[in-house]
Image 1 (spheres, one colour):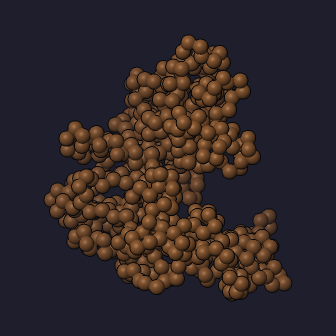
Image 2: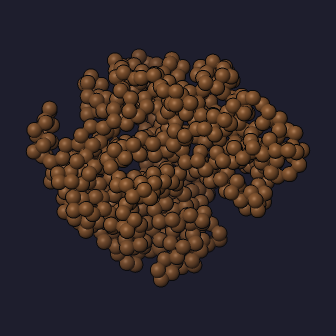
Image 3: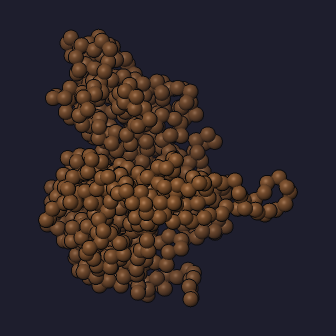
Length: 625
């Protein structure tokens, strides 16, 4: 074995890396390998479930008793640990296991009913064997064979080798639902992505195992490996993935209307993150259309891309609303919004925006900066940074004024859709406006404005009002620590809000920035974190909520755990970077040895091959049985 790359603590394998023959990478594939079931219980005199009732038959559950120990506080005795006896049976004292649900737990109990959770990964799985075999693979076939051991999760695996092959596979053991397979529909109209019936009244159970897939461990019938998303050397010339729907089963917003060969619903999942992939496709297509070969420089620039696709898709509606407000005979309240100088200025800035999201401040870490000597932003960076802030506040206020206000009006304030579904809904409402006039499939009108002479005026009014609401919010006390209550739009630099703290599981002093001597510091005392470009579902992952409206609400939590570019030459030429360092010791200079470069989208060479690694050896750690 001769392999290099990155791993996670406790895993005796390289999870993302290269051999001298090939490289591989992964992104999360949200394949639906779990279901929640509404169960009916038989209880004992203590109120504990002893059985589930399925099709009128009592089936025993399994009890796992759990003990919790805590230090006794206030007695001045260190580590005075004792068992906590105040935890109720159904509050954690006993875990209830339902064998029918692949030995899944009951996660909620109310009287004699509750929710159980079935998941293919509850049993023994073999993911580590996957990585051991990937590191030894010598061709695409052996790489694919290694992935047959990847059972209890799903990832989008990409592969490229020095022979010019590229391949993609999304492995994992996906259970077949009885209703989808035998009825060709969701029984009772209840799909797998909501709580399903566990009593047997509906055909919601997983099908019992009657055939076996290669290296299968789950005791249920699975979607065959041949039907899992995969590709090898496609005619398009490339494979790309960014957590998106890999085969397009959700493109029509219906995940249950594709069929398997021989019958049954071809169901993978109902929800994916699509906006990042939309940007990736556009970047690649532009190169291919120009008949220009993609270079490593292109790949590095693409990985640093922070242009939100939702801005490209939604901005035209705002600009059209502003233009309509200036038409002869426009509704007076709509025309008044256009006449507001601040609104007009903001629209102009958004109109001229190149969709990038630079920090716009000297303290910000932007692509190409010297992390040891951060430069002043250029005039173009400042302009685009301000426009990014203005667009984001317009988008988020549009979400609140269009989606949230409508659902709240009908009593659904506690059931607001997530970020992805919300932006899709707004895009759909705008796209279908010529025929639906602002109404969704439910018949709800999402553009209700008192006194508006027609639906078009109501739509345009809400879009422009959302921009004005965003400007009011930016100048409010909530954002005073960032913008000082200023109404001067030049002050609204995006980096003041879009910040990141690298949080350690143990907290301080291990956080970056944190209470330690490392030179990466908070933007200000009341503005924690470092300023970075980014936005919702951009390529350089740095998500923000599309409902954020607080000072620290635009910070982001997750991001690229590894940026990698490689050319499958002989030997392989590769570079990578990750947001941390090569030491877990806070006292080591290597604790953040990679982070400064990660912050500015720079890379370090990835040394591939044992001889090259030994030649550059700084230290060595040997693991022995």
